[in-house]
Image 1 (cartoon, rainbow, N blue to C red):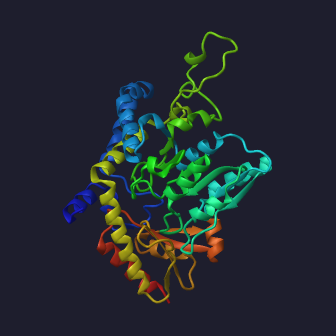
Image 2 (cartoon, rainbow, N blue to C red):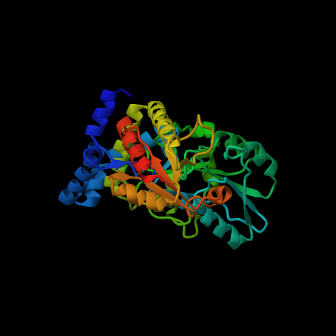
Image 3 (tube, rainbow, N blue to C red):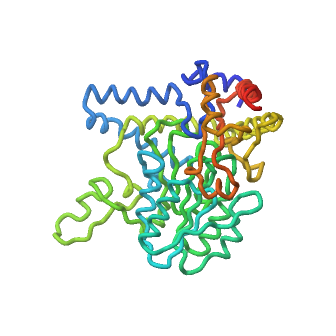
Length: 402
């Protein structure tokens, strides 16, 4: 990714034009003008001809979005469902799995997203089941060998947050997948902080379901998400509810007591009511990511993130909190400033035109508790980020630190 290409990409991104610098791409990134145009053009068409009519006219465009998502994940379009957000996609996936029974076990990684963990614990508590944490390696990543030792006939689900939300750690999701597949246990991945900045191959991962929002590293619009469901796993998926898309009436018309038959692809978990405009915007973001090449995106973000960590490690009073294998870390750089809570760091830097994130205990409660942290500040990078912007952030933190 040459300097000229980065300049062109930034010129096509309204959020890069102003004085504010965006370091919260892991929360929600900055969309391109072409993505925004895909959304607004369809909204204008809806206003002109009617939303339902516009949806019919945009059917090919939505199909291209699904095909682009499949290409990105090395899946098929029939294995892709859309959702209105990452939490909605993940909750829909978990709700579709077979019910837990007393004594069942659910295994999770230490970096499990707080919302996922709450959902799983609630589901387990209602059934008299339990949620257990998979041991970690010394560097904090999930220990796949230890996972293998936990497997018995009561384990019903392995759930993994692939990339930590509170820093750069990236778990070895493929190693976890090999254990889960060998044991025949459903394996669900939360790839919210991975898709769009690190290559994803669901075949190599061995997962049954995987979700990711469009608003983060894909630079798509908020209110969109992808849900992958392995084709051979569909017979184990029961939608929590059905509508005319997920179970068309024609499939069981003509018999008063005929069994309901959900459709035979991932769209059995997809609702018919959705924002076509946002799906088209997501499609453009996906196509842009594919055109750039996720390998190239990964290389640039990794270089920038390592550079920022090096800058911060040289500032007295600033402590980099990233763990995991340095060679596989993501573009999420977490740190603390002596004497200041993460939210205070975020607020003070916001006053200087620098937008960061701050993660507290609710986001990654297991990992934060294990490491004795209550809050961290988080600078999450994009391929749009420049070296000059990293210098500006480091300079601001040097003035802020005691």
